[in-house]
Length: 86
Image (tube, rainbow, N blue to C red; front, side, top):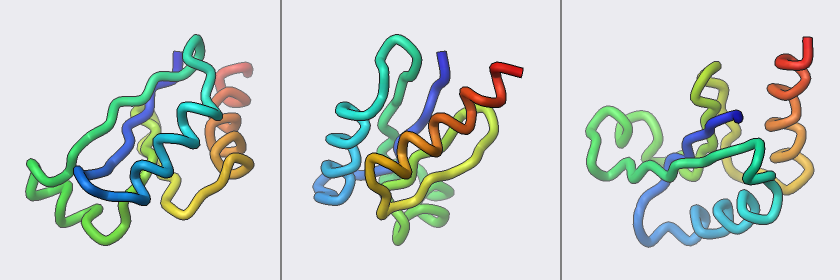
């Protein structure tokens, strides 16, 4: 299973849109996502405050920043599945 983190915060309408894409576009048998509220961590606030939502691959640290659509999401997630197939 591939694990991702969604950097977000409460009241962020763009984050809510990203969550909708993740729910519709990811296979829960192959992907898991934890939503991280950056408001409680000064380092995360400094890094992501003006960039959220950002999807982060927990293993590689690679990021997919907003705005992204379903095609970009699937391409981002699929790139890690291609790596694990080798």
